[in-house]
Length: 445
Ligand SMILES: Cc1cc2nc3c(=O)[nH]c(=O)nc-3n(C[C@H](O)[C@H](O)[C@H](O)COP(=O)(O)OP(=O)(O)OC[C@H]3O[C@@H](n4cnc5c(N)ncnc54)[C@H](O)[C@@H]3O)c2cc1C
Image (cartoon, rainbow, N blue to C red; front, side):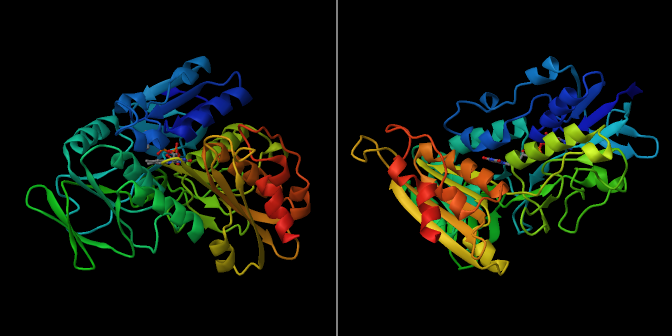
């Protein structure tokens, strides 16, 4: 029997950040982390292991933080939690006694239950190096590749694969547009255009009815009646939280499937916390629970969980809800979103005022390689408090969405944003006279 003060299950972003934060807050505690795989991939880097990176092993999370923070690493699978005895059992028979337990078991790719989904040649984006190495080899050999799902993972994959010569890449998306679950239409369409221009064939408002083949996938049948040839199918249809371990231990699970946590990342069982994709998120504005699965959100929650383990009630750090700041990058175009977009605000029946601006990303705009940045800000109509924003533009627009995310978290108003103090430089930002967030805020005033 191993004894530890703090036990973390899961070695993805949430597990790592919980462990490091727990160490900063508890210099003298024994900290142990159990993870399934010998090596862990950088999950957000996975779309890029097929072309930009020369091998899967170039996309690994470094382990040096474990050593540097004196965190004991155990490679194994936790199969049972005995909450009454404060004990976790591993698959290999080992038992670990804990004082505080954090579940950071993450998520697994979802699968749509259609005929043919079990055929050879149907893949998902799993966080498993061997599986991905095999997928990489199959992608190199394949000619016709069909991606099911045009969310951010589907389009990032499509863009990456479209840069490899002699491949026909198709994306089948059931909604009106790719990326439309994350962005308002004008931003989603800008992303969609980027992959279309790269030669990716889009099947929108279309569902896959069946994957057809004898031993191996040969084609994909759509609900339009059309059939697409396929040597390889990649399902990019979302993710499901890994909750089995928690559920079997009697830890509460929300209806949508994540581990129920309070605002301090505590589960319903004393001394057991959860963070990352396996845990529920609560919307920053509405407080409604949901499952936002982003590495940035996972790390935010992990910092809170890791800091709260031994704190007294009045010193606890609070999770104020998920702003869901998010960005993607498609062939030179950055798209970013934070907080509520126009569609989401309308769905919540919130009266809004919309401010928009557009300006060159350098000044003067005659400088070489100048592109256009677009900003859209959504304010609550009467208070003019910022509810959310979206950006589109060249690479130097990327950090702008993080500035907007901070403004959302701080509940800044249009007046405050119109009087923002910012740094500008001709080669790296928009002009001070046309700074996009300021201009969009001025528009609603
Ligand atoms: C292709 C792709 C691209 C993405 N791009 C982005 C992006 O650009 N930006 C962004 O913010 N997010 C992105 N995400 C989402 C992001 O990867 C996840 O939100 C993040 O990985 C969540 O971290 P986590 O630690 O909670 O879970 P995970 O990364 O899923 O890690 C959980 C770990 O726990 C292990 N584990 C589970 N159960 C057990 C057990 N019983 N015993 C031992 N170990 C166990 C798992 O094997 C896994 O290694 C992307 C995801 C994918 C798949």
